Each structure stands twice: as structure tokens, then as C-alpha cells.
Image (cartoon, rainbow, N blue to C red; front, side, top):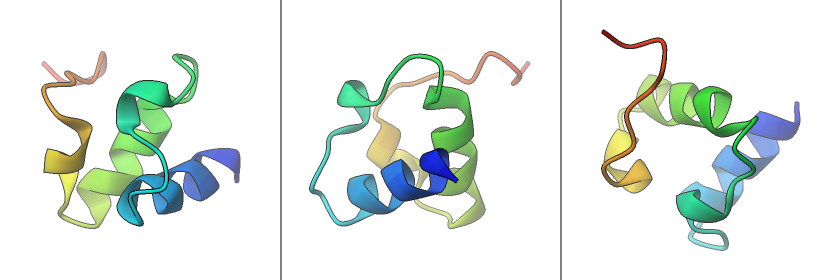
Length: 50
């Protein structure tokens, strides 16, 4: 639930992806990918992505 909230804040440009806590970045990134806006994560590479 927290990841969804942070993803919404990134989408609304109230928070930069870099400011997302490290432990939540993969989940927030997945929300961005699900919405087709992963470009908001900059050059972040998901640890689960190969």
C-alpha cells in the first residue's frame, strides 16, 4: 500500500523517484511499469529484471 502511495506521488511529481526509500523502489517501479510510465524512474534498473 505504501508503494502505491509513493508511486502516485512520483506520478504527480510531488516526489522524485530517487527519494523513494531503497526498500520500496522495486515495488514503486513495478507500479510505474504497470502504468506505462517507467521513464519517471530515470535509469533505475529493477533487481528482479534480467
